[in-house]
Length: 224
Image 1: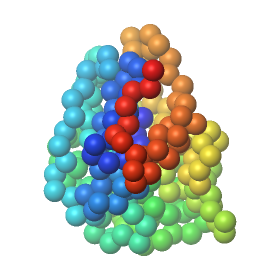
Image 2: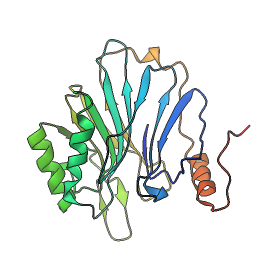
Image 3: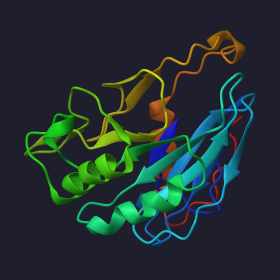
C-alpha cells in the first residue's frame, strides 16, 4: 500500500499486525507531504534510501516476489503548482532498478488519463512517459473531488513493468482523495502471501492522523 500526505513526523510510529510500515517525513518540513508504504512482513523486501530529491516526496522499497525479478515500488507525492522539472526526480528514482512502479498523488492532469483538461504538471508527465518509454496507469473515474471540480490525479507510472495492470478508484475514504487499487496479473500464486487477508481500517487511520496533527501529542504507540 503506497500512501501520501501521511501527516506523520519522524518520531511517529504506526503499527499494523503482520505488516511493516515505512514512513518518510517531508524533506520540506511540511508534515502533510510525507509518504509511506505498508507491506506484508512475509514478503521479502528491503527499504531503499532516497537519492537527493529537489521536487517530490518519496518512499521506496525493493520487493522480491517468488519467480519474479526485483521490483521497486515507490510512493510519491508531487505538490500542486510544483515545477515542471519534477520529472528530474523521477529520473533519479528509476535509476535504482530497471523495473519500477511509481504511484501516488501526482497532481498531474491530462486527457490521456481521463481528465477533462490538462495542466502543466500533466503535460510534463505525459511527455516524460513518452520519452522515457514508461506507462501511465490510471482509473477510469475521478480520484479527487473538490468543491468545484473532479479529476484523476492519483495514478501510477511504470518502467519495464510488463504485467497486465488495471486501476480502480474506491469510495472507501472520507477524504477529497479516493484510494486507488491496482490489479496486477503476474501469474504468481497469490495464496503464498495471502495467509491473512488485510482490510484497511480507514477510520482508525484517520484517528492516527488527527492525533499526529495535535502539537502536544506524544509519538504514536501500538494500541492494545
